[in-house]
Length: 303
Image 1 (cartoon, rainbow, N blue to C red):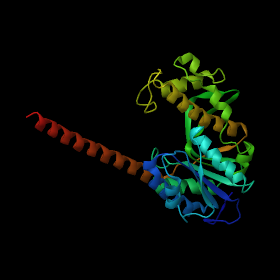
Image 2: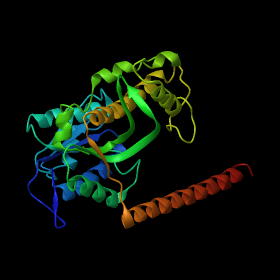
Image 3: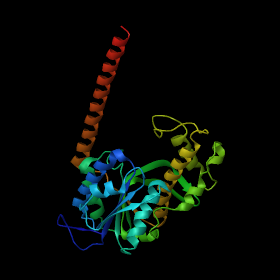
Image 4: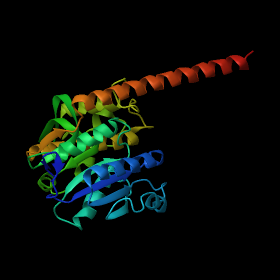
């Protein structure tokens, strides 16, 4: 991987490959701009954009990305395995190019669901490139108060799946297998909650998934709802994606991989937090104006 010497990045490194997953049409332009900025930081040796949504035209995506990166290609994926299936599509393609590489992965919610702005992207790059040890997993790290278990493996922490990086040693430790199809069999598409989860999923993780998916609160998934015939399939798909995220971290933890947070620190952290606060205030102000305008319009309709 890359290393730092007197503040500059050295050229003695593995190739750095990037996999970007595209699904949401509305995020496309912003995502491409973010990849361009990441390329300025990392100088990617190859870029693969995995198209996971057939409503987006491949030709249009290729036109938008034309000549932006060296060794670039668009790959089509059928959304099986959601983002992890798409990521694996990119990794498998890279294995036909090289057997040794560092990997940066992102989907098109990058810098949308968790805003860190350019400060966060810079911090991510310098954290990964400046690491002085092999076998590393870099990204936004979440923790849980209890140990979560799947079929003998366990973790109380995981790296968020929408933006992360692995060096070649970490990839080799999991045999370049980002996506594990067997995990999908641990969730059953049923409306009976007690039969939704396989026994291979530990009780703490089952409770975590129940609270996140089936119990709508301010702290749960934004589409959380009681399990019923109208949503069992969608909730099963979401549950499998969550398990893939946790299982990847479990396998890497078992392999002795170092988990390294990419969060900004120092003044950059202060700037990010301030920008988030200002954006939240702006959103609340716009909402109040819209509600006020709606009330006036409604009042006029009934006069």
